[in-house]
Image (cartoon, rainbow, N blue to C red; front, side):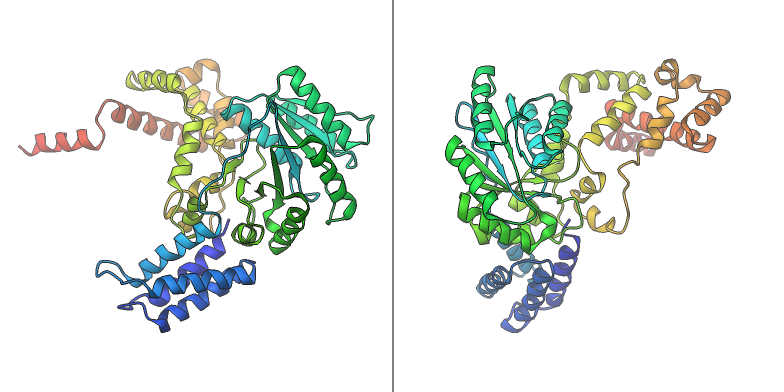
Length: 444
């Protein structure tokens, strides 16, 4: 995500490297390169020009402190302006209403149905809501079935009426059912087309008029670049939606939609989809996105994802087991599952400052844990609980059962033992601090 844009911007800032101060000449050269980088990322031309004009004005008005290099100051100004360009601050979803009704809009293929499921899952798990998914796409044959499958995966209610071809009445029936069943949020998945057409616009406008939703979200495929921005404008002119959802930000997107859409339609980006899993949904934070575009990472989001998977009681039990050297392969497997739930591995790596840039050419397979899991699953319950009994014959059997070889099994066992030792040292206060004290004792 945004890799090429980040690299281009970094090259632009190097023009100022070695310069003693910011002048009209060197800043103009830098910003010419920045504007080209933005245009190559499929950012709207007017947006790119306004952006660089603003940056130039602010840069020339700054006195560069002796402790700050001109290139560092330019990075700071560009970062702040990127965040402002994308909205400045995150904007929450409106859940007022009993039930709160959320209307999804967008073209076919933008990911509306999948995102509806992700949003329902997020509201259920993080906000303790009881959502109802509603199938109002009466044209696409698989749409209703897809919504039912997603609802089953995340354990939420779904309403559909295959006998009806009237999405307005289906939406009204669903809201009535939500009131009767105690659903406090209704998410309505509507039909899309391959392109904007009058029939679709009239239909979704009729649904809006009939149900008076608290929130209208426009879902857009971020990989479509400027086309996405133009479509957003047409939908906004007819619907006056409340916010934008960018899907497929985990793909090879150039970022033009994310950087242009707020300026063109003056509506906030509220959510981003970052993968296929139902957990792959993030609230959009402009400042954090600016950090990631400029290669600064996003530690806050990484910590938040980790905390979502963190169970305090389980952590206390695990700490006791580690202290007693009882950490076993069941615990190891549990830790792997928690990491996998946090999302796409390359996406997680990009949140660590400096790591994303270092790993840009390395393909991190999301199935990287499969071999490890296969080895652990090939162990008996007794072997998982007591790794010390894993002799040569048992290891050979595990290698055969997991489709790996003896060297891979031995490597995993060594890594497991090293991890266990390190975790025990940290838990018992014998980490770096403990080693330093030990070193002092030996020097006396």
